[in-house]
Image (cartoon, one colour):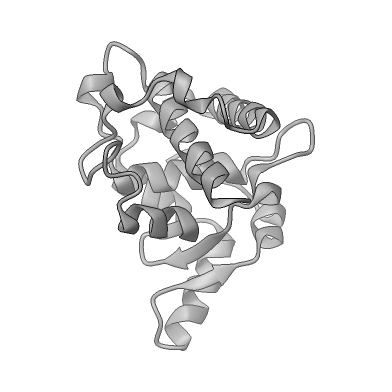
Length: 175
């Protein structure tokens, strides 16, 4: 996926998480960087009833101490690409509005919508879990267990995860 589309898709996920969180509570949200990174994993790991998922569209994860992390999104954050949207405490709702997504590929946008909606239908309250609860939930996935153990065996703190491993594993969406 091109860098610009990855940035827009990630911002659109942030926007979707804010909508899921609810308009009455968006200014008090706890959608921190860590929590959002976990929600991105859960959103990408869900297989749409239409057979498509975000893992087939350029989202790739590594196993790190705090669970699955989309490596390019994390690198973009470290570069400051999302500085106006998210800090260590929460997503700022004032910086996101639907009009900024006009150049996001429509198929990708619909896939994100379907994936978030599928996640909501499985566990509507997942968005309200703490970041640490979501980390613990991601630690139940064999893709994280296997790959983080491999990283540690090589005295490293991260290990790329094959997307097919995530697609094929048992999923956990309840803390």
